[in-house]
Image 1 (cartoon, rainbow, N blue to C red):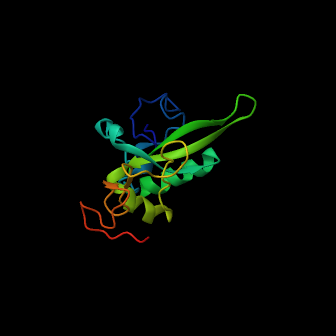
Image 2: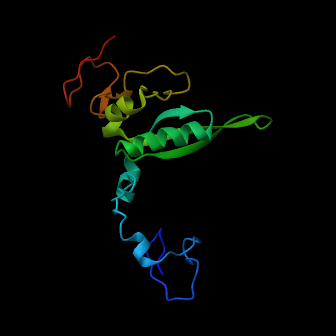
Image 3: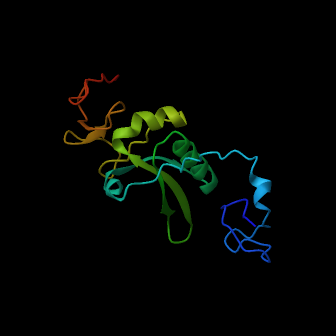
Length: 157
């Protein structure tokens, strides 16, 4: 007897797979099936976690999960950051996708979104010493730059 899911073999007398909880089948029942290689989803390298930056936010966890799956299908690792916003009386949650900054351009293409620049200071205005992420390479660029010093991408005003 064999499990049709995990392919574990069992002695006769067993009827269900202890791991998958599915009915076992005779080994020859699977003989005609072709094995399909399933690629695991893109996983986050633990060393990469320090290189993650919020890309865009969602109001529902379902939307954030759907976007994360789209990125995994594209081979781009991502995680979801949950932030509480609001006051003590009325708190809500926002769901932010965090991705490697160097892959912002790929993420924007995969999700058809542009990265959200987080507010600088308290007023949202970018000062002379502030930076933003280049939309092409993801590297930090001075806020007053017209061209990325890393990749040469031009920025429109």
